[in-house]
Length: 107
Image (tube, rainbow, N blue to C red; front, top):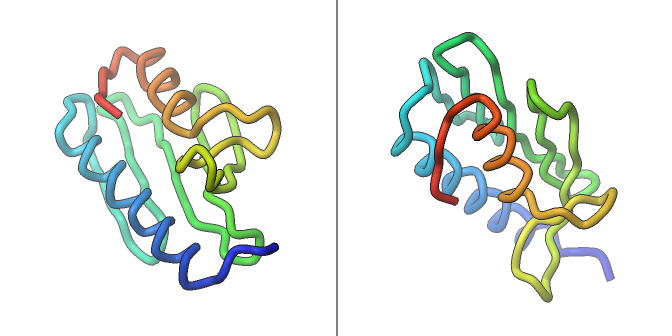
């Protein structure tokens, strides 16, 4: 059964706000912006991470300068966003990519 749009929008808003809070509490970012379902995080050395909602597919998309593009669907059983190609959690990929750039975050 497809996820209800309201539930999806609530989950994705929580996700984006969570990551905004996590990144704001970290060092290594020049600019952080969350608007219209898109979180853009630019590192001090000019690399940009983008997390955005994709309503038609009920997914969160990540664009990373380290590992490229990834798509995540919410796993109700795990209560987390997991890759549509392999099952890796969004938090695992994002923390690893940031660590590769020397940015430590607590997910």
